[in-house]
Image 1 (cartoon, rainbow, N blue to C red):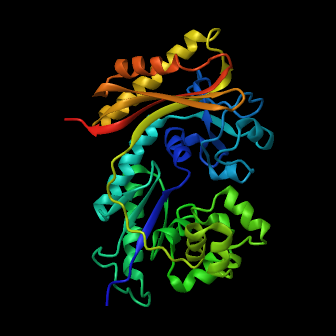
Image 2: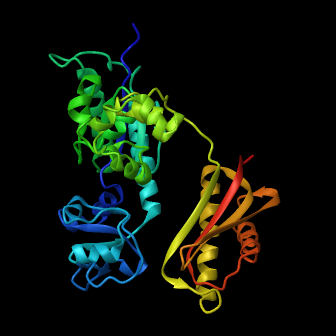
Image 3: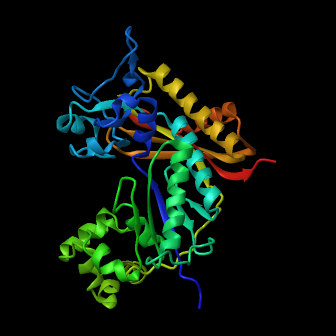
Length: 378
């Protein structure tokens, strides 16, 4: 008989905000949102204390990257515009983002997990999947707990992450990736949710359909129009009916997902297709009147992409740009160069040539630089 499959999903708790609280421990327990610009950097006072910016009176187009749990209790969350958040929680502290710091802590927590369980699928800066099926002790019972072995491994992982970073994480461990992604969010923060197929009806089915990773806003709205709000209601649908309404592939997947069926293996290594950096401006910039500011930002984006390529050991032959204008229209342009590069000046030059192919009469809301057709350096 094959061993029971155990797949864990580990999600760092309010990751960016938690990293900032390590730097500013006096903010512990307070509502804090991350997403400000450099002008929101805390100011050191003469008495040694820090003065923090708040959301009160915020004006601009910034969005929340993440928020502490006390801030979420006030109704603000990631992806929300900062102006809207200011109406709900004007007293919340506003901090700028520091992605270099977040990436450093990301590497640290992943290394801590790998010390305990090395079969990992990297899913982003703050989340990973871990295959625990063959991990020593994972199939063992502990006392009256038939799944005590895998539960103990998850606790070891959580403790190792805490020791290495000072941060908490939440883990969902189930027979597959789909269920584990849902489970890791059930007992946040600092949670551990272990589910088997027998727990689906009680723990999974009462949840909204959007909690299934892969059901987005459009599919959620279409399901709502059919009177389907919960995963339980989706599970009651016939497979044929879902296929008829959503197509062969997606309809069949909806049926399987609602019943907790997911056979996807972990992808422990994949080559990136491209690397990019982009930024949304706090005010729309004009190509002529704000030329100096735009040029400096453009150069910085090229330098950041070059740094990413150098750190990860890649060269690229396709250089591209992304522009979003004041009317929210987005355009992209790219070109191929003769020799693959990771040089900032070369990337900046090619990106500038791409920019000349765009009508810049409208104000610019977002600017991005991308390098594709990647190959390993050396």
